[in-house]
Length: 412
Ligand code: IMP
Image (tube, rainbow, N blue to C red; front, top):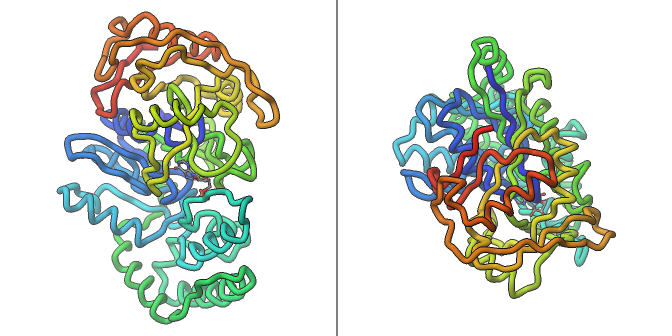
């Protein structure tokens, strides 16, 4: 049996999708355990370039079953369009995808509340993805949310829907929202149609995963967002609304902590962030522009240009500690080619501290597609080894391009 957790070790967008996609070749289950369609995992494989938002990246492998766990919030419209896109590619989604009865539903009023709250925050806005994730989780915690499993019982769903509609109408008014749900009966009918379409996928996923563990199957728990966007340990209030780290993998899937074998932290060779909030190692505009163009640093969900910064070892060390990261996958090393020197932030992981840097020598050679560590220029090898030395954690994958095969695997 092996249970591997894969988390983002920075502000999200570290390239987790590629790593999960690669490791899914040897997995029986891939489970998404947090977030919702605020996430966007860009995957480049034989089907082309695809952005997945809710469906785990393992869906491309015929042996791999995919689960949307209880910790995820599900916008049915977004999920159904993803299912449809995959189906068109000839992927047997219905047989391989299961959704937890306990996952919460993103409703249109959640999206409206997200928009109204962001507008009301003015200059203090968080820069959310406006997908309604925060308000959905707010309602989950306030016990007024609707769950995926509720869709299976028309009468119960209708009752909960009507109560939630009343509550949200008042909330939207209080928020001076420009939007309101005008035709609740139409909306209810729409959700009852979604219920029919999603029925084949909705099951008790904890039970499935318990059986998988008992049968010695290989499980990957796929995190969304990144450790620095965690509701507790991130840069609050500029964070997402859920826990994003390795502990959330248990709560969001129903797999107990004693079954976790390893935690892979995915870190970019530099750092990016979308949305507002502190970013101690942010680059100057000109360098950021160059990295953004080379690294195609635009949000997979919203298309927003990502802010770019240097690697911050101090915050990486903190993230490793909190999440028990046992190995690192370092992504996008190729993007740093031709930047010299390469500053790495070595102190000042908190927004109020100023950062001090160590400058490492850059390299002039293109790294794209290199698959052997020994073929990296000495400066690039040094960059990787410096991170290992500072963090005390082994780097087991170095990504040198978006494709599955553009990866250096370094045995533990
Ligand atoms: P929310 O998750 O939409 O509420 O947004 C809160 C913050 O998390 C914003 O700064 C978003 O840009 C950021 N965020 C949410 N999901 C992702 C992601 O998958 N990648 C990167 N940033 C994200």
